[in-house]
Image 1 (tube, rainbow, N blue to C red):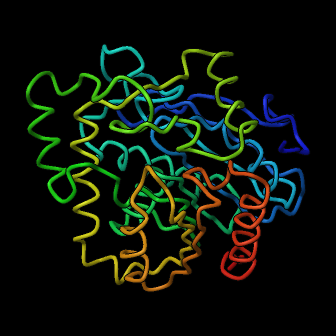
Image 2: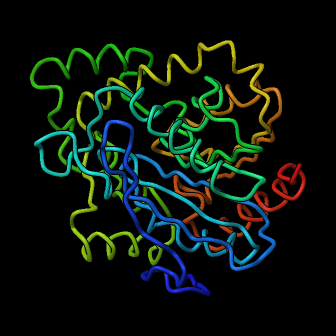
Length: 314
């Protein structure tokens, strides 16, 4: 059983939950947890994956907060506590990944202006994809970045024809409809829990939060989300600015990940001008920071070492 120094099913004292208005007025649910010191270590903006909620990462937030970091996070548009973009109940939809980047760019600029440096942006899964895309496109420019099981490719039964297949299937009906009924991955016999983590207690935390507040539950993605995800991943890998993006990056990759394609991360990571790539074997499923203690502790250790070396106040 995983033993935590904090209550993973309660917001910590000092953390503020609020809503941030995007430029078009859309309300994004956000968390801010200022450092408990007059000389903060810096600030971390952490972004989760598709369907994620920031409650899932309170344990990791506490680790960094204890080290003196100010912590910020928000739920992506159309998921978690940031509303829905389709009438299909709890379906994660987006018209274009450009909307995610636009929200991120504006939020990041305000975060930089309002929090102490150095500034570190972290992203898990879809969040890792969007962090890297925003870095490469110059939409954000933190002092350092951490990508955790980044969604730079996904496992698909259609292989290299996946994007084309998604467009065909999605356009057979309303593309805002759910792409599948349940689980994180269609065409699999693995349970959702097995796809995400080997730690049953940490997995149960997410279910507890969803039952505590059903409004934050996000189910399967829409076909439009699937189509746009393939498009965004393809365009990112084809972007020649990957090689010149100057921000130092730590990339944590779970080689046995059954959701995202680790091979894509291991292809793209070495193209970055300044990147350290750390791999995990069969001991880790997709959610590295919510894995069993041995995996999670190693991941946090790698992040701490990276921040100590590459995220210093200018």
